[in-house]
Image 1 (tube, rainbow, N blue to C red):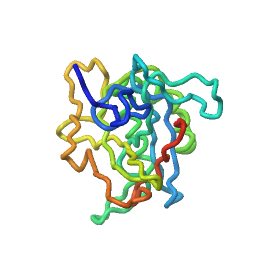
Image 2: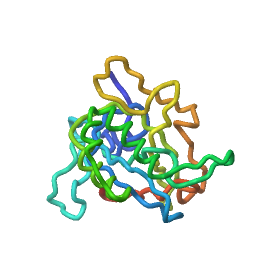
Image 3: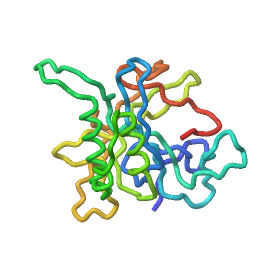
Length: 224
């Protein structure tokens, strides 16, 4: 079957960066990153890699500072666990949102989807930062899963269009990630016409705005 997915107009080769849509990925690592606009707002970032790609594909260097470093066998990318950052907040209706509670709920969902809830429950930590470091050790690994990757497009200073990837919110239509061999698949199907999945680039936008961090600009290699 012929497909243009992952290709660019200038080359028939697969791009080394993963794009939006329904994908099969593994989690190489999980980081808990503070946002540049608020010291108390954090993003859960999944550093993912697709299944190995055959043919002329050349993945990014695992260590971009070492030209002799091995290369990723698949496409890689950073994916926000939520479209918005995690932080303490009080909603207009007076309900309080706890950053730490919402982060732990997110990790419960992930652990249950990949069969690691028991390992997650064994984690003990005194801070949310320590908890997320231990989640990285427990929930990262070689297990592949089906995901739906949403995106917000943005244009960097060089004129390149970048994808700021995120997992669409769980809803009655399904979940954004699940086991590859899930018996009754409930995975969300990517829909470019759905603004919860795809937010088109606003022309002349140089950096992500609102609740999004600056994404990496185009370069020789991609750091994970």
